[in-house]
Image (cartoon, rainbow, N blue to C red; front, side, top):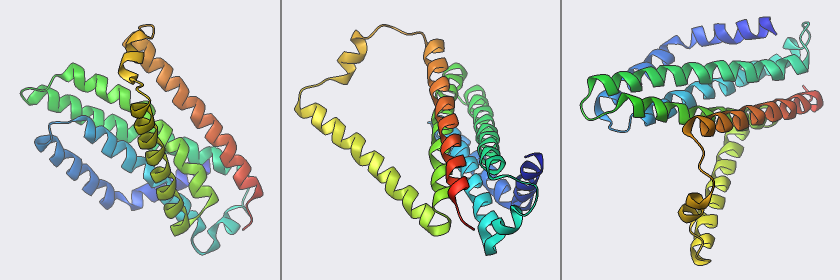
Length: 217
């Protein structure tokens, strides 16, 4: 697994020009946007998407057939992709959080404490997105994987919007329901959200292992 991780990190080294451009864009946004949390989302999501790029590189010209002729198991491959995605997601989130906090310090009207809280709230979201993305790209490679991902994201959006419309017609007020629920501290809420996102990551890893074990090259 260590060798697979080194391979993917070296692939990132070959993409350093792209990484530099992404960093410059994020830095530029920090001077002009008032919603600094967007930078955290931007960097975390972009960093996570590099995992799918490494999967595409591995599959290029039937590269997986050669890769699995080496002492590498399919289980190790799936676990390494999740570990690499977690590292990339964490790195992007950390970079975005630093920019957000710096923006709160050096720009008037932005509270650094609120910036930190927004960054912490977005970490489970980024991990959840990573958990959702990897099995899809392992199951459906290349352009087909991107199309399936877009369809699934569109489906989730339609479900959320439809649910909100149905709740509105039924007279259900989610804000009122939320106020009636037991009060949970910010720290407990963040810990619960992070725990759920890590549980989703473990489930995603198990699904990815099963996909790899049944995949033909």
